Amino acid sequence: MSKPNFIIIYADDLGYGDLGCYGSKEIQTPYLDKLADSGVRFTDWYSNAPVCSPSRASLLTGRYPGNTGVNQILGGKRGTHGLPTNQLTLASVLKEHGYNTGIIGKWHLGVTKEHGPNAHGFDQFFGFLAGCVDYYSHIYYWGKQSEENPVHDLWENEEEVWCNGRYLTEVITEKSVQFIKESNEDPFFLYIPYNAPHYPMHAPQKYMDRYTHLSTDKQVMAAMISAMDDGIGEIVNTLKKTNKYKNTVIFFSSDNGPSTESRNFLDGTEDLYYGGSAGLFRGHKGSLFEGGIREPAILSGPSLIPQGQVCHKVGMMMDVFPTFLELAELTVPEGHEMDGSSIYKMIHEKKAQAHEQVFWKYNNQLAIRQGKWKLVINGMLDFSREQVDSIHLSNLAEDPSERHNLADHYPEIVQALTIKMKNKQTNNT
Image 1 (cartoon, helix red, strand yellow):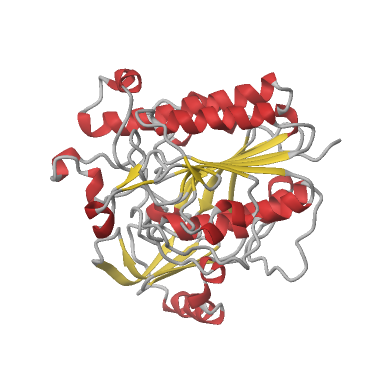
Image 2 (cartoon, rainbow, N blue to C red):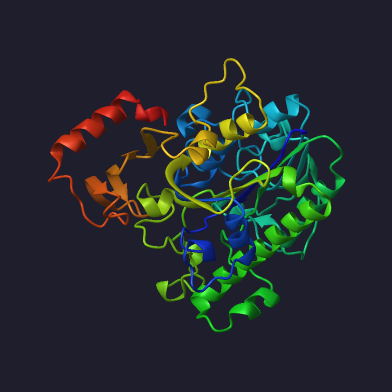
């Protein structure tokens, strides 16, 4: 059989509770639900960071954020550096082995030419380089300098292009479908980082009309997610029509949890909050509690991935790189230090695990999960910088929402996990 095709579909600020297959009773996501049924749905899948850029760096390099050179949200003004040029990406490795590589959507790993997608292994790029843009004008407004001098941010490879007035979620879908249709006999890797449902809160009327029964604070978010879900349906349907579906592996997830940033408050008050749902979990984007880092995740591929499976084992974004290499029967290039582990064995063997422990560091927050135990140091719930607990220990098997702090009850576990974090040199995670 020929080498498998690979697609990564990455949502932006999508909450764990925002999909039908993850328990949402309000948002309709039939295509993602069907994708989950066709493969493996993960309940304990994590982002390597609670914010955009480090999460994406880990996804593409297979490394902890501190080892990628990107451990903070990157700015969007022109000239901003990003993912170092010496970092090996999944795209660059697959390209070396004959894959046609493309990214359509949000990059957010550097704005300069030497830090852009084409410099990191992608043959084709269509999308934007900054962290977010207006969905219709494709202008980057955020940050003090950009608010004073807005920057148009839509590109095809290294050429600026204009699609003014077109809803970006639909454009990303259209360009992804085109990429698949134009793929020749060579295998392909397509990375589709939608900007939905990241602010600004924009959605076409046809999607808003699906949710007229919802309150205003939920209607726009639901419409934005439905637009992305419809797009995913179009992408899968195109794979089937072009006879590429059976030999294509699709991974879907989100970069981090839902946002409570001010741009999600359209009238300046919490009465009209348009953020997503973290489900039962505590915390949001910016937090190392579960709501900021535990993500919906689906892996599907008819010829290589078991169908109808729900996996309760721990996986992380940095595991996608080595997993795809194993599925392509390729090895990790010599000299590339991989922090992630392939999950192929984990989803095929009952007792197999990908990780004994996983670690996080974001600003002053530290966290480790080992089995059922999760320790968070200097935990915050979002970007408010208001510390909740200096030391918070949870038994996730009994308390997945991290509502009960067991640190005083199990000081020996706190000590053991703290030592492991220090031994891991968490400043590099």
